[in-house]
Amino acid sequence: MTATFAFEGFDIPVDLAILTGGGEETWAGISAAHLAAYARYCPLRAGHDVLEVGCGVGRDAIPLTGVLGPGGSYLGVDVSGPSIAWCQGHITGRHANFTFAHLNIRSEFYNPQGALSAPEITIPAPTASIDVIILQSVFTHMFEPDITHFLREFRRVLRKDGRVFASFFVLGKESVQLSGATPDVLKFIHAYGKGCRINDPGYPEAAVGYTPAALRRMVRRGGFSLDQPLHPGSWCGRHGVDDGQDIAILKPSRLPVLGRAPQRADLREAPTP
Ligand SMILES: C[S@@+](CC[C@H](N)C(=O)[O-])C[C@H]1O[C@@H](n2cnc3c(N)ncnc32)[C@H](O)[C@@H]1O
Image (cartoon, rainbow, N blue to C red; front, side):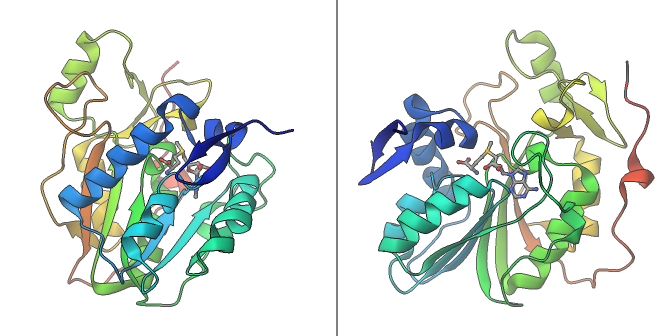
């Protein structure tokens, strides 16, 4: 029997909760913090059409059923087949306007048998059909070509006045200084491309950070601009802030998206030993 725990009327499988991040003890608190961050920076309303990338086993989808109501819609996508199958079987069963789709992208940790690379996928949503796209702790596991591809897909599926809420590790002066001086936080001391640094060279995808310039470059190349100044998080030991990771709210830029998206070979520099 799979071990489960109760959350808002659902029995969440412990193994899939761990894969989604944190596990049982922190589940409800992280979910509440995510919902509070949406309310602060990018309010989700009844009737909105929402896309979540990297939805895991529904930590945000479940409380969002109450926010979006029967007049809204939600599409969750993830590379984890078992998480998507659970969400389809349990959440869609009760809320038909909440649907889920598996993206069979290779990921060393989340989907090692995946057959596709991120730039090969199309988000299964029609053009200009989404009001808000949310990603919590997802771009923090991805490299620039994949992020840029996702952003271009977001530009396609978002309505003109839509917004993207995405968390990052932003390696600005203050966060680098703080993380260097704070024990037991991510350090990002290994260079891994233009403006990109990783925490663990043995497992690069585990935590990926970007300089503010690299973040702005990806956002611009993806066809977006920052809608608000970045919201700094506490991941580096920063005190007095509400969020764990840094949060970017993006809006579609007025400029057309030009040129090809960067490829891995354009960006990779030799990792530091
Ligand atoms: C740290 S977990 C966060 C899960 C969820 N966003 C949350 O905070 O509750 C990262 C999630 O992103 C998914 N993921 C990783 N790479 C992905 C990709 N390229 N496309 C979509 N999902 C991805 C993983 O399967 C996992 O569910």
